[in-house]
Length: 311
Length: 275
Ligand SMILES: Nc1ncnc2c1ncn2[C@@H]1O[C@H](COP(=O)(O)OP(=O)(O)OP(=O)(O)O)[C@@H](O)[C@H]1O
Ligand SMILES: [Mg+2]
Image (cartoon, rainbow over all chains, first blue to last red; front, top):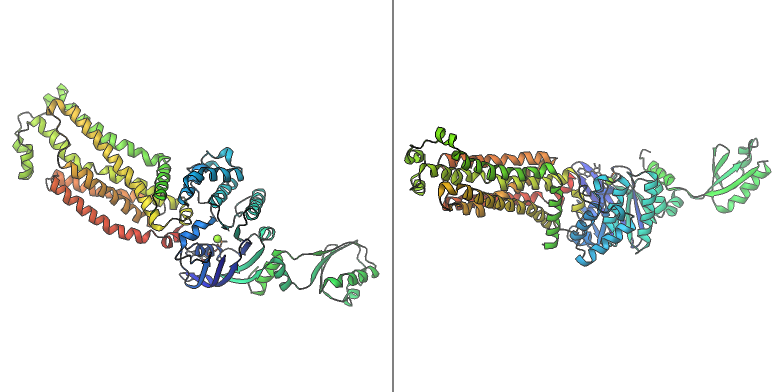
């Protein structure tokens, strides 16, 4: 669906993309994670043929964005960082305009506009000028515009960065709906790790124009944090000499305390029963044992630490 | 180039301008003042008796008044009385270059809104990501400024023609307007000037950040009109069919040169650096 090979792009002396390679498969939600200035927006612009790369090759739908930019843009939808909508026009007028320049046939257009307005819960205020809309509503209009021509591929550039938590959740739900219905491919840029965790099938972590790692969150976790992490709650006070007794325990790599909770990194799932038995025989009164999945946040910060990035 | 895309862009740009009062109020006021109110005043005032007795130099020799004009121009005035001569010269000739304020103003207002304004309001990016070509975007936006500029000019011309023929009838005794020189002015120079207004505003818009800046810098073109007014008044330029065609052709050539610059500036590659 999307393929980038060794793409570089500089603006003056700033190297925005530095040998970027990645591939996005049809139907997946792909997350490009990175801090401010990592090159996320630049990547989207390149893929839409807004400017050429300095070197490397890229393709979208198997087409070269520089040569067939308008074909690509006709089949892809985009939600830009700022909504880029006309505030003096109503939601409906905005959508009709974009529908017309996207080449939706005249007969279908009114129906399409009606459908997206309905999907995003905007019918009631469709005829009001956008100037009076809240940020969350504008974002929904912008999403409606991105979907208007029923694109196979959707670029979302920080879809929730300016929204409050509730609107952000709503938008996330909408994104999930959009990806499920119609099997669209979604290319999501974000620095919101929780959002990526919730939505993405696969992610790539981008920093200073380079990919630090890519794969499913589980793959990344396995590569960075081999083994399992277990949370164990126990009643206070913890038995004395616990650390000494645990030292002989098989498979235990590290232990951290967060109040009454021990965070243990073990080599394997099979090491859990032995470790619990050791704790019990040491006199610990255990109330909860739970393997904890590694969060994308931990992965992200670990990656950046490994590559000498500042956290 | 798809006409539906162009139509949509034109419609959208005009809808936006129409909702910015500071932009369109002058478009309505200026023609009313210059092409209805002033000529009406000019034709009606002398007929008020006190005015007639004090200011009208009835014993003036028409030849003296016309002495500044070239010979071939004088011929046009032959056979007119002094009463007729003054409205004829002022409304038929001196007013002509002023007329170009219309296409210039309308085209630079709309172009400033649609080129600099989109940049200012950060809406350009949405257009750049649309499946339009650079040429379609430019053409749509240029037409959005050109069409109303030419349209309003024609409308003003019609108004002007009606006003000065009706109110001037008691003095002139016939339908005397438009004079032949006005045909190239309206149908050849006016569109060229409107286009010039668009192109200069596009070039200015590439450098400035806001609609107002673009509009004001575009307004510098009014100097061009002033030049023509002065030229006309001092008899250097005489508005006839031939001179009209020549001036128009020169303007179109200038337009053609500027267009090539504009097209180079108005590409996604250049524009995206500015959103
Ligand atoms: N048009 C431009 N001119 C000059 N520098 C640019 C331009 N566009 C991007 N850059 C630079 O390229 C780098 C990457 O920018 P980009 O906008 O792609 O980052 P981003 O990952 O989208 O960041 P953010 O999270 O802040 O949106 C930055 O250092 C930025 O300053
Ligand atoms: Mg960005």
